[in-house]
Amino acid sequence: MPFSKSPLAPAEKPVFQTRQHIFVILLPALLNLTALVLLIVLSTYTKRLWLFVFYVVPIIGFLLEFLAWKNRSYTLTDTRIIKREGVLSANTSDIPLDTIKNIFLKKSIPGRLLRYGNICVETSAGKEEAAIFHCLVRPEDFMNQIIDRRESLRNRMEINS
Image (cartoon, rainbow, N blue to C red):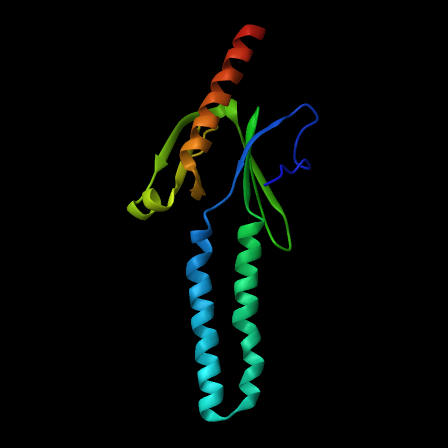
């Protein structure tokens, strides 16, 4: 997955990028497939061919879910974590590494088997809620990279002061 350069500051370097596990779109895919099969059965059983028009709805629903998944990425740079998402409109948020207090990894049994999990990031920015990154692929690697980059950033700040 190539790093996107657009939200990066001039001297900022991307370190690690990940996305949500493909498992995230499995349920919407199954629901849309079920709706498509029901429409096919209903239209052929009732012999109402105009119901074929509604075949497009589950297909569009799945395509939107897939595009949302495809356009959601989490990039770790040498100074912050960037979350990008959006199909028609783009949303970007970031967490500076120097504000991170705690990082938690949560994995369910299916997550352990399929190698995905949630990462919770608590910051010292005064927010009550932690940032939660849901169903990430290889969350241990992402968490370890965050910890390494946070520590190297703190060491650089101590040397400069």
